[in-house]
Length: 245
Image (cartoon, rainbow, N blue to C red):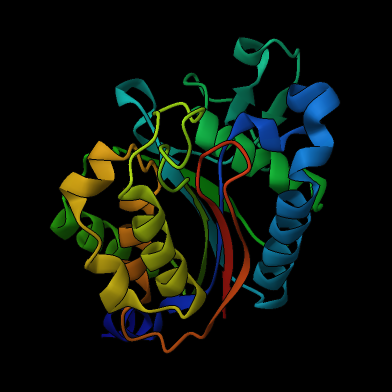
């Protein structure tokens, strides 16, 4: 009975939504680092809100290819060597894991290192971009019961098709998709997040869709308020930063 009561009290108390391009890391961006200054500053602010919520457990979630999907324990390492920079990061302090963090979680670990995260234990979860909406909701609900006070750092990008020079080329549906996602993230609207079209997100190469819908599952019933801190597409890719608390 005690365990059941604890589970009922467990809930999501805060979330930070950040983009996950390796270019967010100045060492990777090189001479173009200043182009992401505003996004980077917004991410720092969002992570600061997580710390202020005093969570008992932080989960960093983000899109991952097959090899990087699933749980990543505290202390798991990530590297930006594949992007030409000999920079390594750690997901909190702990023993190195056998598997390397996927890029999205490596960017999340980098943000935590740069903001001196020491508030609580941290674990990672790599999520498949094609993960169905219902599975995202189920996963989010499970995360929300991981401790009495849970926080999420949610990594993910919007559409990859905002301009002709974008990595996914131009798609005239991209701006509207990103605008809908930004409105939902900025208002902590879980219903609107779950209404994002899975097939359209896949067509637009929106890597954040599954992460955002996992957040929606975790936040149902939590009564959090949202604030949009950044919304732009400097490389033709939708980057959004939001804070929920």
